[in-house]
Structure formats: C-alpha cells, structure tokens
Length: 155
Image (tube, rainbow, N blue to C red):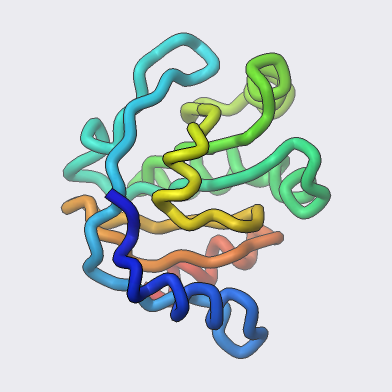
C-alpha cells in the first residue's frame, strides 16, 4: 500500500525545502513488504511489529550514503530500541560487500521498484521512522549521524 497520494505533494515540497527537514506524516500506516536480505533470510515489516523501525534507503553509488555507512552500526548499537533495516539499491554483490565491510548486524536488502515507489523514494539517503504499531512517525533525507539523532529527538 503506497503512502496516501495526498501526502505526495507535501512530501515533495517539504523534502526539497531547507527549512522543513522532517516530514510530518505521522500516524499513516507504513507500506508492508517482504524481501530477502544478503544472508538469504526473509525480511518483512510485519516481523518488526511491536518495535520501532528505521528504514534506511540508500545506494552504493551515492556519496552522501557512503559518508553515513560507517556510522550506521554505531547508531544501531547506541539505539537498541530501534530496529534498523537498510534498503540498498545495489546489486547482491554490492549489498553483501556493504554488510561485510561495515560488519552490519542488521538486514541489508534490495528493495523492489514497487517497494521504493510505495515509500515515494526519489532520492537517497532517506529514512523513515516507524513506530511499534507500524505507523510512520516521520521521514527525512539524512547525510550525517547527527541527522539520525535529530530525527529521534524530534519524535
């Protein structure tokens, strides 16, 4: 299920404006998904019901993504109350390489085109914070560890 169509304009406007870094799309159900991670394990959004989840959309060819890859594991360890899932548009080899290079202990998956479209991902890096009930709390473009912390502090 894609995010509500009427939010598309709001997201496009806010994500392009410097003054509005965080998207206020609270309480909208996050689109579900089923996919396989780099270790061959099934990853579904339903698996994380009852936990807060940070979906991190990225690309190995994105310089801003490359800048934040090294701090994701640190963020994950400092915030065990949040499940992290990386959705990287790299091929299987690139995604496995990322997981190994940075010793990620969270799933790294390749999103389908439909999944990226359901979350209206038009640029990366982009994150969605989802609450324990599967509702989107917020979403934003990020490029630093501090942006991740600000996202948590704002919610």
